[in-house]
Length: 485
Length: 95
Image (tube, rainbow over all chains, first blue to last red; front, side, top):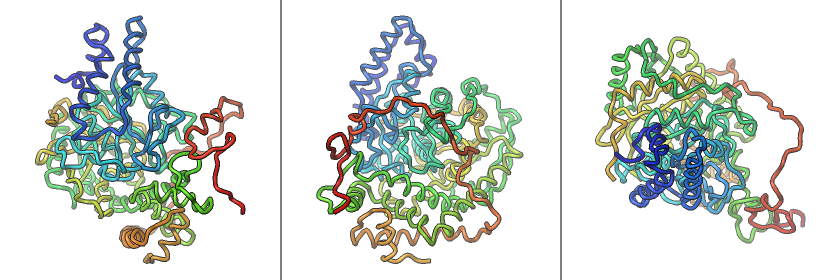
């Protein structure tokens, strides 16, 4: 059994009995990266010196009888839109190719106090805009299950590196599905927490009313541990929720008796691959056999979610990305005529096509004369979409459906057709607009590529989401499959 | 509503982007396709619907007005593309 397939508590007991050291874990991580990353290409930057130093310090502390943090010694990969002091953070953009952050994101600080070890920074679609990793300005990450296929996105590097056994867990960010969809495509577990549960301070902003950081892991138990370590109020993030953080790990009771599950017919209709639908129905049968009940429900505004999302997310992005002006950090164009020209040239040279496209769309939607027709209209429809969730959650504990309508597609297959690419997010976007938590867990394979089951819960009810996902996982083998690399 | 090349140029100017002729053509087509798709939202009557700008009941967040450590001048300039005398340097704003 590979080292990273051990349960967290087994890793920790081996560390205590000196059967294993934190440095062994780090070396194991870099050995797997050396073996597999030439084909997977998940990492943009490695933190070898820093990781080895941190591991040696942890081993020394353990020797001295110190307390073990919740994630003690675990090798972690961090999506490269989360800032890390002293480790280049690029957002996979040429604009930030040499950006050296002057502080750690709050989640990075939290990981440090939980004593995990940062192995390196993971590839993404530029500024997290995309669903395939093909928008990385450096290179596309590849799906470990078949390297001709995309790993999904935007947290494609985060998902691929966990699937390839390069790290014990990783962090990603999710704006419209960017944790859940790549987790589904790569056959791992990805959790998008409730909006506001995890601090966004130090996450390079894409769409501030939607962005949320979360864990990508091999199984649900690890997901609960990582969430435990990163959740919590942060005064540095004015949208951080000041709620009490429950114990997530203790929620994994294995018991789902009496849970009421709603299955939106809109998530199972046209456009959903028959193999995906079949796998979701088989999972629902599994829940039934465990004592949960499910019935079909309707969320009538689902079909409006993608349009709503692209207007709102692009509008917020056009505003957020105004900060990239070539003055304080990032690239600066040579020989500008004046200050405005400096902004214009620096941005045009630094941003890739998808980023420019979304800035253009967002600027248009916010511009004088069009604001009411596009931005305000989308905000109103967002209310209707959120009400769909409120209505179903009056009678049900969870909503279940597929994470993505299909399995991963081939690299290059959808390039040049942004609208088709956007529609891959049809099952994850409504959840983001409503701000509620959702997890993707492996529920089968179609032609050798993994399928994801999406389990959606009420706001701040991650415990029920994790409990259901864990109970399901205990009775299936999908999450134990590993790609051959 | 359909976007013209002139609209694309106007929006690019607002967004401080300089587009090549080829990019203008491309964005013109793609933005029209996306906005046409977005017109789907007009099927819904929303006159009486409140807009959602934020899903959580979080309003203005205040903090106590106390002095806390801040980054040093040197650290703040660490990523500056150009600097002079402890400040970010830019081309002249006034002629």
